[in-house]
Length: 128
Image (cartoon, rainbow, N blue to C red):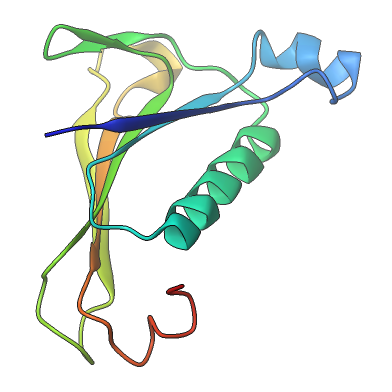
């Protein structure tokens, strides 16, 4: 399976005072696993960018399944959940930071988001 990766990170356009406080900034890495339209992926990227500017902290890196996670990694995909008209999507964390992570204990390191792919009346507004 091919994974498209996108990394959102607070950029240089923010003030130096906020950047210094954020110690490098919050990072959200999104792994698109397929099934989403270009427009849906663009909306996801926009949301990730917005959150990296709203969160003014940094979390310690954590290793999950042999992979180092910097702040948060989300897998996103379109999949058949229940067909048109019912569940639009579902999401949640799947790996939390360990209890010895100090103030970051039990905060999510990874999470999954799934969106129902059959074209339903709700998706017709966003699908190309």
